[in-house]
Amino acid sequence: MDQNISSRDGTTLAHESAGRGATIVLVSGAMSTGATVAPLAAPLSERFRVVVYDRRGRGASGDTPPYAVEREVEDLAALIEATGGEAALYGVSSGGALALQAAASGLPVRQVAVYETPYAMSEEHLAERARYTERLTAALEEGRRGDAVELFLQLTGLDDAVIQSARQSPMWAGMDALAPSLAYDDAVMGGGGVPREMLASIEVPVLSIAGDASPAWMRQAAKAIAESVPRGAYRTLEGQTHMVEPDVLAPVLAEFFSR
Image (tube, rainbow, N blue to C red; front, side):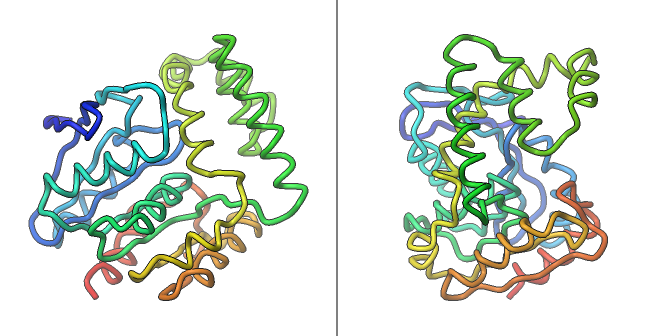
């Protein structure tokens, strides 16, 4: 990230942009930085100005406690103001929840696209989220960053053997560094359920996307988003999972953001 701006509370936000045209801001999800969504910027930058940034508490961006979801919405407001005054938003996973909240808050957003925002679709799933929040909060308060990361990986459905192998790998140090931000994404997701009242207040077009190779509940959540916003559309991508291929997703986003 080669550019910095300050958010309303003084937090430094590292970002970079590529291309020319209407602005699109890419919003990453949990356990990720702007580098995670950067591969999507290259194909989109052929037609748009694409902004990639490190959310607060990650990568080269700063952090200012106490955390509140409103501060992350202010971060997006600052980025939009600094990069043209109006933008479309694309958010992946929990980053989609943040993008939707930003649109609902009245920021100058013209369109929102989200990919597999993981809202819970059953009482069992909601209970699992509540247990996760409780255990995550305890782990972070006690300084057990590695345990916090493990809890998140368990929530995603990874096998314990794979998680234990990951703990021994060189990539674990980077994941450990991001652990405190897991609480931020947990807060962005609220109680975990579909926030239908908030979604109903979004006035701009929303495209909610899922991979048809992802679990059924993720497709159900994506469809629920599209059905809850006044101007929503739902689409699936053939053969894609939560780790969507940028070259498959980019043409879909480019078509939507060109409208």
